[in-house]
Image (tube, rainbow, N blue to C red; front, side):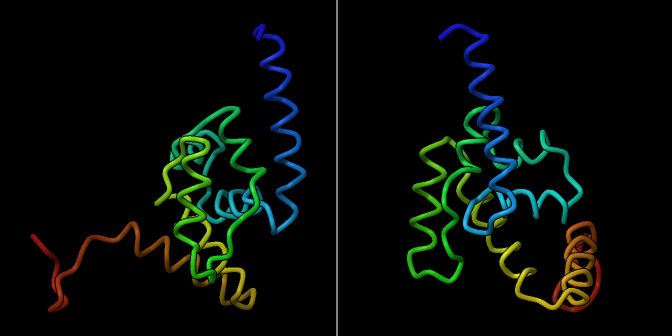
Length: 132
């Protein structure tokens, strides 16, 4: 495919993914919410998920598996494999967004701040002191 057609196809996929980000049934919704929660650029989000360009937008247009489903892991793995994404990171995104969406608004904001603080904090041992 000529490069101008590939660019046009990617632009159309990006536009469709942007529209899908307003609907919870699409992975685009979770990606968008996670990007906002973590303060990531789109390229940083792509890097975290492990795919970019057309593959990233195709991922965004997939139906999001319910984090409550008994086959959640299998569904995430299948979707991730289809676009070359990292299944563990995709699962993390879907679960975090689902968890924070289930909380009341004020609690969700506090939970996001606590999660961010926890991730940036040094590791502590079980006794409450810092590990060396």
